[in-house]
Image (cartoon, rainbow, N blue to C red; front, top):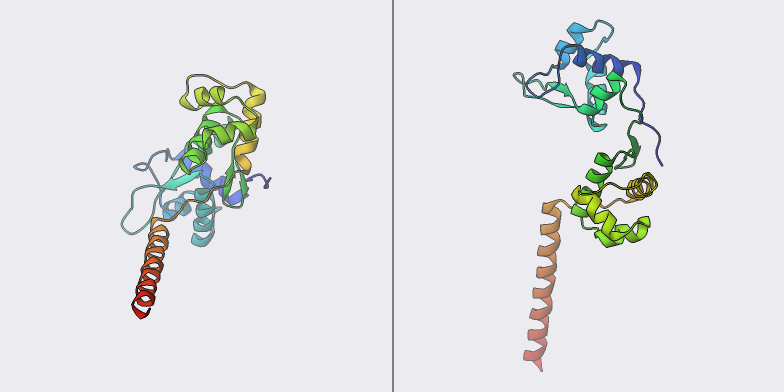
Length: 195
């Protein structure tokens, strides 16, 4: 498992500044300069920008609409819950894979994401030690899992990592394969003609 995502002082100041100014949608958002003007403890543009980038990667803030050439930022639900003290467990980072907490919505979202990347429901059920029919009903939102099963599933999904293919890379690989096949066919034809 990775280490728990913890806020530093500057990140907390940024989140509180966005929260106190009602920046909760892409239309109600602030630029780095506006954040600097509102909070005098945040001293440099670079500090605020780098911390916003880190918060964005942690899914706490997102980019709003552009203000001229400047990006704007607003809070996501995770950050709002953190500020209001409602979030009991913060995200953990393991490489490119984000660990999830044990609430059913985040587990269901992670399950759907993993399945969209190609892992079959039956395989997940077998590896997590959960009934396939229960897992199917949970995924569709019809039924809830027992707390022990939820923990098993969340722990399993936290360690599963399936990379997402870039369409351009996939097309290059397919093109390379067809080129190699053509070369082989051409060589076979030449060999036949020589014999």
